[in-house]
Length: 171
Image (cartoon, rainbow, N blue to C red; front, top):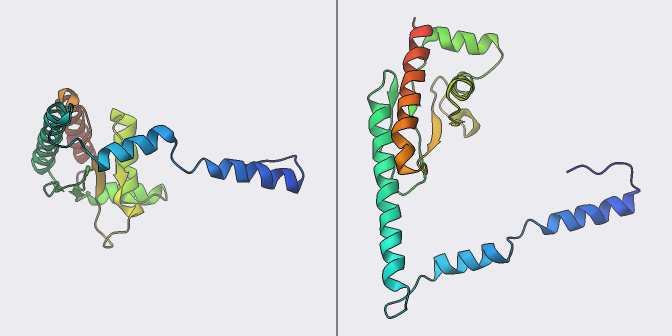
C-alpha cells in the first residue's frame, strides 16, 4: 500500500492501522483452534469430523498420485511422490532452444516455461528459480489442492501444453 498526499503524521497512522490487519481475523482464529483441537471421542461431531477429514485426505492423495504419474509420463519431466505437502516439485529438462528463447527475452527458463503454461492453459505453477536451484536445472512447484473431479481436465491441459512446447523447442 502507498499513501500519498498526506502529511507524515497522517501517513504513519494509516500505515499503523493497515499493519494491524496482518493478524488473523476472528474467523481465522476460530478455525485454527478447531484444527488444532479436533473433536474427541464422545463429542457429537467426532464421527462426522473424522469421516470428512479422511475423505478429504484420500482425495488429496489421489490427486497427488495422478499428478505425479502424469508428470513422470511426459518427456523431460520427473517428479517425486508428494509426502505430506500440498505441492509437488517436478523437474523439467528444457530443450536448448527453449533456454535460448528464454534468455533472448531476458527471462529465466523455468519462468519462461511457467508463463507459457499460464498463457496457453490458465494453469499456474511457481517457477523453481524463486526458491533457488542448482544452476542449469529447472523445476516448478505445483499444488495438489485441485478438486478431484477436475484433476483429469487439468492433467489433460498440462499434457497437451507440454507436448506442444517440447515439440516447438525440440533441439
